[in-house]
Length: 389
Ligand code: CAA
Image (cartoon, rainbow, N blue to C red; front, side):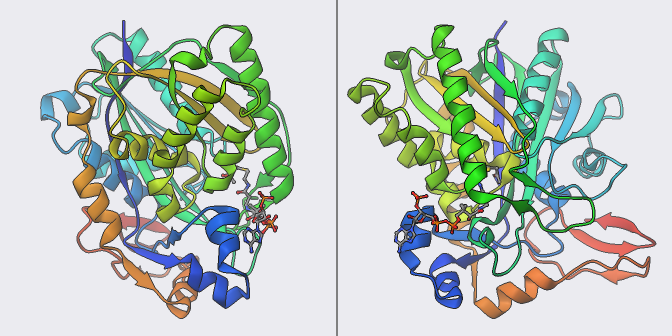
């Protein structure tokens, strides 16, 4: 039975900071951000655009043409995030209500840093294999937040990707065999008391590359890499240079014609992420959307590899095949418009939004709507409860 991604969509905040402005403000050569880090812009979420709102909006995008009867066959909803809004209640339950999904299903939240989206996807695929006829909705949603004037500031961002996983998928059939490894590392973490992540930046890059090399070697020994057949290789992209370093590590390992093909496709796969920034759990999947919408040369039946990395750390290399008619399930025009029509913030506006925070004393706070055109937003917090539109 073929199982994989049947529908896909994303959402991103409607405001951004141009990284040249950030570079000037921080006294850094803009080329460090544009070339050294490999990013152009980063999305800046308003308080109303938390991961529930971003995740639900991504799901609306993915399910926009989906009949009610198909929604009724969703038996599992997973929200993967490392920017959750509650220590107990799953953000999936807020999303479940916002989307009007049936009660007769499981709705849960999972976490393992940026790997969570892939954990969700693999669990969803196993669920569909075990329950013929059932579908699963996986949402990866995050706000990457390191703090003003930190080394990680330029690698912030926000957004969400939603994927419907089903039998006989229309976009990407997933292979059951993959290579995965888990190892406790302290490269990046966010304690419960902190709104910002901490990272040992260079060490995190080192672990990412080591685990990619180990995954690649193991996949090779299992006969899974077959680079001649691999039409594209996607990476978790906290910033595009990180994925580029992963790909470059193969330059002396695989034939040059294969490397050049993967490199050309990599350029298409980073287009959206370079303008949105790090989406943690969703970064790899925004890269998938970018590749499929921006690359005109891929064909149905082409095989692609996906490398997922979550600090802490879990790393998985897995594979899929593009399905007949996959282009019909994409929406390049509206996604390009979404990114092109965003509002550019100046430094003062960015820092004001960054420092804005929700009340924590149980009082009522009406939250200014950052994007009245989006279907869902956090509108109020009162008595420690969150209310959404
Ligand atoms: N022109 C062109 N390039 C320049 C330049 C200039 N004027 N000045 C510097 N550069 C280059 C540097 O040579 C360097 O390139 P290489 O990485 O190829 O060597 C690059 O710009 C970065 O500069 P620095 O080495 O000075 O790095 P930094 O101290 O500013 O830190 C960072 C960069 C480590 C990525 C930091 O932003 C950070 O800590 N980010 C958060 C952690 C992170 O994203 N880690 C990724 C792996 S973990 C993961 O993937 C999970 C996740 O999502 C967090």
